[in-house]
Length: 258
Image 1 (spheres, rainbow, N blue to C red):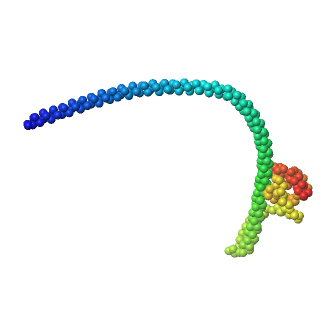
Image 2: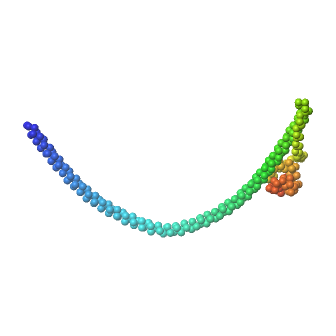
Image 3: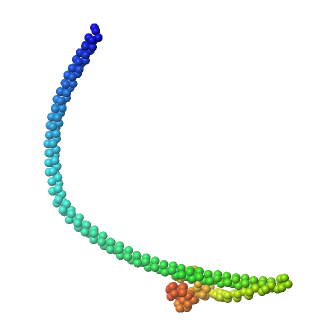
């Protein structure tokens, strides 16, 4: 067999195989189309059945809902009347409780404000007395410095006199200028022989104010009780105008009797 015959046979076989495959594909297409048609028909029938069942279910649900709403309407009206009554009673009680609470808060606020004003007044008095004591201490330190300066000037004057007595180059040294006269220091306040009381027990008198009163000669409750507010204001100076001296005297009298 020649080469051309072999090619011809091969071509014929290929054509025969292609025709058989074409026939097979055509058969598959036909069977698939039939199956799709049957499935579509079955699906439509099933969908129609389901729609019918769903319609029946929805109708039954509507009837049940209508019945439930009808039954609930009467109970809801009766319940609403009772609830409104209970709500009104609750609101009335709440209003009463709120009014009582506001009244208690107002009373507590007024008491707290009064207490705070009292504390602020006491602290202001103590601060004023502390400032006065600091001023007195500063003045005392200033007097002490003046006294030290006076002593230094006296020492320098003595040293200058000694230097004048020694000849310098056959001549006496020139006398230095006379020292300034020292400032006279105020005499200290006299102490009290009696046993001193703790004046800070009296409301409005702190440690600084007690120190100031001691310097003025007041050490006991008896002395404060016998003093007049005018006398105390005079010895305290400008500090006395900012404190409640009348209350001090009254408390001192009460403590004197104990």
